Length: 68
Image 1 (cartoon, rainbow, N blue to C red):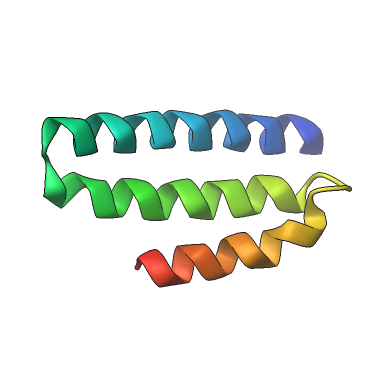
Image 2: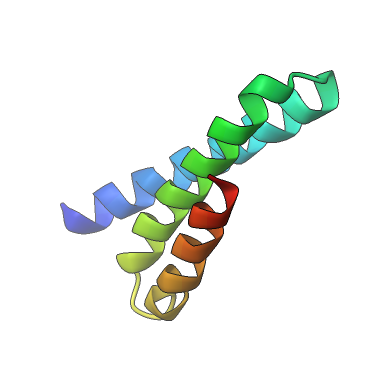
């Protein structure tokens, strides 16, 4: 069950990145900040659930804090 949640969060983070790229290309600046922040937050949580990627979770949290 735990692995499924982290995989779902990884998929959500990829969708959020796609939404960010779409909003950026379409010129919607009010939407790009929240999408990028949510992308980094969901990516950090999903990295925390994977053994080899767990080392990078803290770095992704730093990126999330900077984008806020």
